[in-house]
Length: 207
Image (cartoon, rainbow, N blue to C red):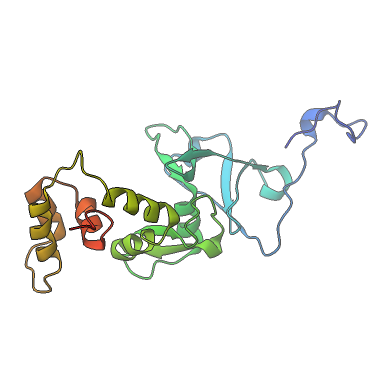
């Protein structure tokens, strides 16, 4: 944050462009720098904290750092930093988890918000998860519960018929099935996510 000479409390004799308000460190908060593809080409450096905050800085995060709000992408806090040959969106929750949390296994590829609030990026609210666990976790969110109720009453715009869904469910719940969910989805011309939603009951719960 930058003060100008017209602001109350501005000290005399100090050029306005030199007077910054330091980022106030929160209790037990730890900061670590972000290193992403192309970060060396940017004029500023970036960092995230265990409290879920993100900031830009030049030399020292607590001396010349500036807190950033970023953008919101599909409900998640993000940074859109244009770098040479890389314009990818940076998801803050994934960066914080990647820096501060160790993955239990290679299958833990997803980051969940324990309280289902996507903007709460406090480290204590984040956890690595497998695809299966992530799907189960999503079913407990208020938004998913509302969506499930809506889908249960849906009758138009469906890619599958009731008969097809019955066959799919029979296969999905067969402990001895010899076909992967990905292959099953391809056979019916739908996404793998659709199959997981059918299996969990999020979609086609009435069948």
